[in-house]
Length: 233
Image 1 (spheres, one colour):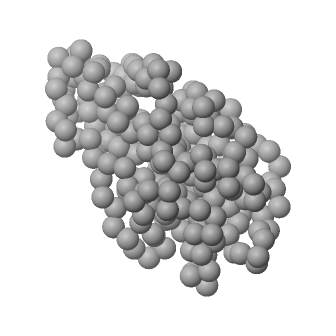
Image 2 (cartoon, rainbow, N blue to C red):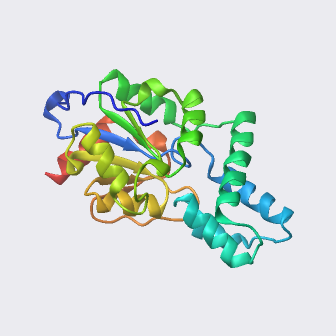
Image 3 (cartoon, helix red, strand yellow):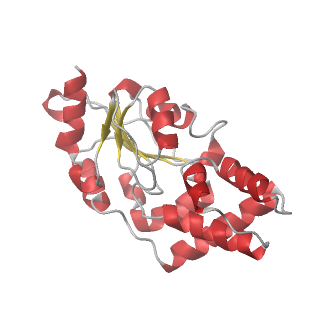
């Protein structure tokens, strides 16, 4: 279930306007976007259908219902959405049980945010069962709040998950930095009014107002995130 700890003190040192940091999971903190595609390819191969590699950009980063529904429609496979969702989750869990590679810089960034008591939330379109498995390796102690895709009425690209996370941390969305890897996640964060740091994993993401694009989490630290808020002012 979603963590609902009391909202921490959102004041930060040095007069920074940064109130909280909200992070995506797949492709942002853990190198798992490829896992989802591999599972999808394997399942549809078993159903007698080959997936076009160009579809990978369509299904990445969004809610499972959207991705699964698109693949069923695109292939004409004889499988229902509910059954496919179960197979996808099971296949993904099997892969992360064997290996769960973290993105370069992820552990260092989370440890720095924790050391400076920056309120931090994990915000993912993945289901709760997947988030809880990943947290075992990622470190649940780093997050005051976690939000799963099957726990909000509308998940990414809608702003609801990020608005929920900001409210749960007692933070103004405009003073939250979001770290995302897909255009779907970026759209959700921007619709919520957050400043976004995009670290593209599968498809390119262009810079824009309130959006900074970097090539790796290794470029992101607390000073960098606080600097984004200073520039906004």
